[in-house]
Length: 187
Image 1 (cartoon, rainbow, N blue to C red):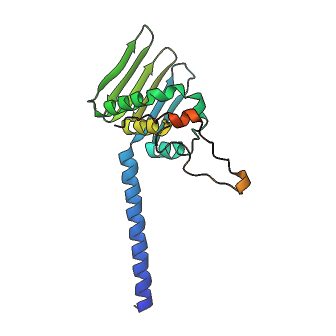
Image 2: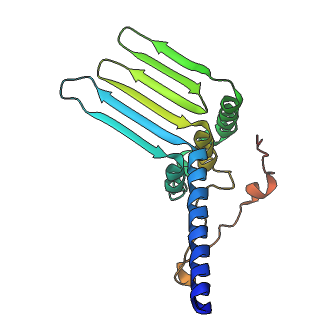
Image 3: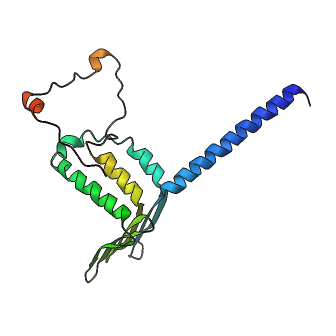
């Protein structure tokens, strides 16, 4: 075998090894991130039976493209509750498995429970049975992503075609300058 052939084979072996290692690392990441399981079964004779099963990683990627800036003005009153919501998510993550909420009525049954690192929501009523299972870490990520004061909130960057297209920075008012920034707890 010539020297050139050996070099080509070594380069191909290194590339194949790197590809296998990257695919393995990606599979481990997706496995550790968990899966979202959604099942809907209508109880009528011709009712639909839907089952969606997809990785939380896919939901994280999709959520990265959601523009939350439009919600800032509409959700200004809710901003003060985000630390409570985050604390509840962190508490659920640290809590043992068990039922969190259960409602039983004559023809309705709703149960929200934590099982094996997932929050499971089961609804059984006259029309349908619904089961949703989401990793607790995924719920925590969504809450952090939606919180307006979170470092990962909003767009990652902006594009402008020219200087005239870029928005002018807003100047703070006198009242905004006199008010100190409120500290938010992080868990």
